[in-house]
Image 1: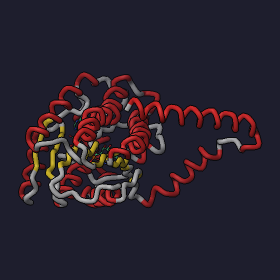
Image 2: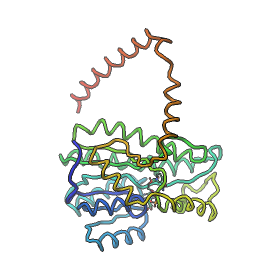
Image 3: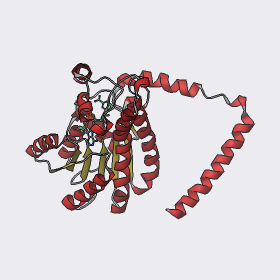
Image 4: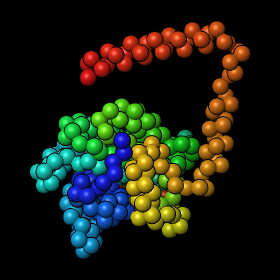
Length: 303
Ligand SMILES: NC(=O)c1ccc[n+]([C@@H]2O[C@H](COP(=O)([O-])OP(=O)(O)OC[C@H]3O[C@@H](n4cnc5c(N)ncnc54)[C@H](O)[C@@H]3O)[C@@H](O)[C@H]2O)c1
């Protein structure tokens, strides 16, 4: 059963101070939600809160680095203190990117880019899912991935890998949380009119050794793409429709269809036809189904 009413619900939005996250704050605030903006940048939070409150939206801001698990738990406690309960809506939207040749990628590139885009989402799920379940209320979780998560690129390896992982993760949570009335969606945008071109400026010193070139020129070249991106409010309207339909994948970019089809056809075409090994396939499938049925019963008892 999909969530149908947003009035007075608490929406926790990571990266809510800018771009896609701020669009979500506007759209769900206008739909009656109480908004929590969790972002790493205090000044951007202040500006976002002022804009939301000027429209009469109830909004609370907190500074959070989604890579910091302890801070994440404190943020969740703060929401319960301020608004009286855990969020019914969790938006894992914060993300960063940085581009360069895959063969130049350093440990720091992997640790920062995957730390925010994958680790940050993991932290959001582990922090909030048990609280959302314990509240006994219906809810919904939307994680922002990227088309890059569906198709890799030699210039965005850690980003694409992290975004691929969160798609897969949301598939698991979508299946696992349905029984609690909690819907799960993954948003895969192609291009958003946002400030992500400047993400490298948020890179913490501890992850400072990059194999990529980052300069005013590279930032400007990224802006030249993103200025033509989808407006965050329009994107958030698609997200709202996706929640109302409890849609697992939200991909409101028609230009992506053909490329995705060609990509996934290649994968499916790589699967050998049944006549190659019908007997082995039958035995493996039966064994897996028997195991899964037994485990499902055991997990139900444990749960
Ligand atoms: N812009 C695009 O074209 C595009 C395309 C596909 C996917 N995305 C994804 O959309 C999401 C939103 O990005 P955007 O394009 O709106 O960019 P944005 O830079 O405008 O917004 C991202 C926000 O996340 C915050 N943030 C960054 N690191 C953080 C951290 N460690 N903890 C907490 N907050 C942090 C930033 O301060 C910023 O306010 C990201 O997950 C991004 O990967 C963007």
